[in-house]
Image (cartoon, rainbow, N blue to C red; front, top):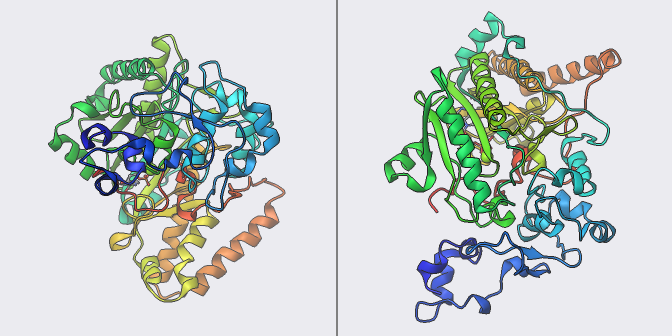
Length: 483
Ligand code: ADP
Ligand code: MG
């Protein structure tokens, strides 16, 4: 095959991209069959009969448990015993997603943290023996017995004038995002081209029906000019192009890229939706400053509009009482919500840039105390440029949207309080003493108000990327958009 023919295939990047092509090609042509294929490294064979195969991707079928190595970090690889494999190996969801399909990405992409995907809604039922232990490991949530609350009423947030002032002083921008999927259509990693086109059509109708502040334009990814693409990329609005090592590619969700993918945003670029990336729809609300109720309120309107539109089309969103909103990846079940503030924390940043290891970890410790997760200023795995951190809720499942956003508000208020203590001359030890004291007080009153344990992944996932280790290439910086 010529370079033009192979370079759009996921296999091209997986095999090492242009450099590898040049190294391996003879007379400018590459014989794919002569190359060790990383997709087949851990067992299995291409399933020529899988109807979801496309010209740029083939699914791998496993007849026994894949040969997991020390590199396999995922919960899937720990949960999938030979017994479980035997039990599920011939099970198929109502839309034809198989166990091999569900475990493929975690097998061929060993560094992923979760490593299993659902190809449609029914997978959550038929493969629950695989998924529920993964959910337990990731979220500390028992999907068999617990119920997930939904609450999208922004008026319930408590955000006092005092808090508002504090947030305005420290917070540069605020963002709330979640996934929404339409019942009745396969998820991206199990979808046919028709499914994808249909989902895009329903969502485009939704976007066309948005009014007022939400009114905007849909840009198909394939039909974008370079200027439009650059504009969206620079602002961090556009999703990452699938790389060789992320969930999308190995799960088959990057088939026929960029067909039927796209991005919607309103005129002010404060409401955004991604179409047919990892989920049918990712909804994002963001704006400058720290007005959390405003951002959350817009998020709720967007969520409501998507739900209403699905109903108008005679369908509904994927959601049930145990799992909340359902989608592709177990890490995004429940609310699937991440509410983040981009916040200036100069004092914590100074400690981080210093030499004392314990002090470098102080922000992580403080955030963890309030079930928050700090990230760098350009998303996961990025450094905090100019002392700017992205601080968000860590949990997704078992708490309602309102609860999680409130926890974020309350936790960030504490983080700011501690930042101000440092600025006023207190030491890292003083800060540690404060959070230790709080912990003791909380344990004392725990009987009155049970505290649900924070999600503890069994497998060590990078702390700062717990909920996203599934979708991200954890071994490389996040920026992959120049592919
Ligand atoms: P997610 O997976 O939740 O969408 P990522 O960590 O991949 O988040 O970040 C996606 C992009 O959103 C990055 O460019 C990041 O800097 C940006 N971002 C996240 N939170 C904020 C915020 N509060 N304000 C501005 N940009 C943000
Ligand atoms: Mg991300």
